[in-house]
Amino acid sequence: MIRPFTESDTEDVVRLWLESARSSHSFLPPSFWNSAENDIRTLYLPMSDEIVLHIDDASGKVDAVLAFASSYLGALLVAPQAQGRGLGSRMLRIARRMHPDLTLTVYKDNARAVAFYERQGLAVLEERVESSTGCAEFIMGFPQA
Image (tube, rainbow, N blue to C red; front, top):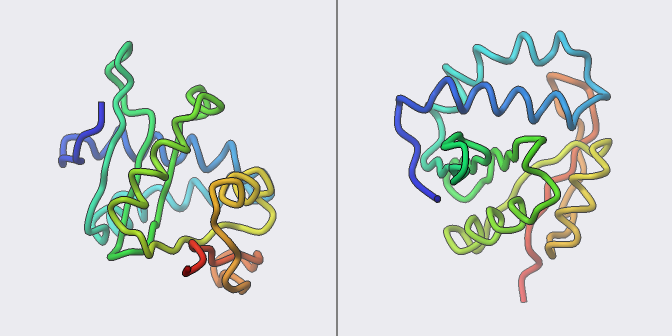
């Protein structure tokens, strides 16, 4: 089921965000994500204009999240146990319908995510260094026709 975020979802979304981030960003130390937990709760979620959740039918738990700030896709998160079943592709299709001109950033070293986005038709628009980690990241978006 797809539904909008409510305040009562905050802790479930923070937990999923951290679980997903830790599993896909092994190149960052665990301490980075430990210190990011409060920022997710008090900064990233509140600054998001739109947050969309996917709820697993069997468990009733949040297993995927889209978070936007305008047309910037700040988060596309899929629970590690739900990956590999097409849920990320489905969420990205929803994201693109919501914001056809969306952009996002992904760490260059997150090869699995970069490959996923490229398979979905996104292209690297720019490369830069992310200030809080010093890691290279790509700004990606759908090429304009």
